[in-house]
Length: 310
Image 1 (cartoon, rainbow, N blue to C red):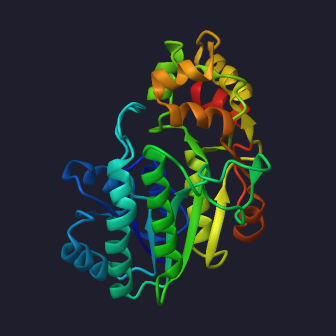
Image 2: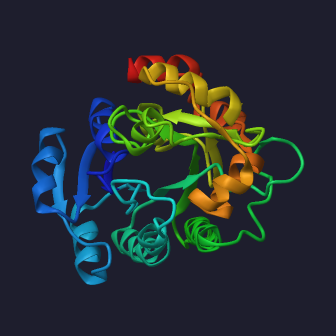
């Protein structure tokens, strides 16, 4: 299969390219940075240097590749996570305007399948603590989460509503592993070592994690399995903040995390982020296992943290 990957030089794109090549696919990897092209070639893919916001150039690049499938793993998250800043703004634009341009290019190229990255932690924070794909997404988020939720809904609506192409949305859990915020050299690791990543209040917010290599494997599986729709791609063990954060700190060789009241966390990191530490919902992966034939090689963050950080 001929596969065009938009976002090939990102944290998810980097492990995705060699997995696609190992599965026998012909791969075209898009990046907007010329300096990233060599790494794409080294992974066995053909490098395409193009900006997703240049609609004409993007259309030409995708049409020239003649892909059977297009994979959209474009994000624009800052290298360092700074909760007091609007860290989602650039990615929100990618998920709206960038997605629109990429779908138009995929349609012009005659691609039959479109796979797009979303997230599995924007579910409405009511009811059960672990959600399947039928659960509603956040309806009334506030602060920067409002624009973030709107951008995700826009992306998913565009992909699932694209004419003439089968759209699949993979809602990923919190990524850890090389190149992510939770990597040993990532922002979350740095903050945890400095004891600036606390357990907020009772730490009831529930997280579903996913190793970045397992995320890549899900996209490879979804190229030929499953059908139009949404899939949660997460590990097998959703966990409360109060449960997983001490294990993460221990895997880093850091001191145990502090505990802070919600009001103090709101002053330090912002009210919306502090609230999420109390109400966040996890996700279940049953549908992805059944329909994509996928299962995480790191079924739990417990062992996954130790393997990736030790």
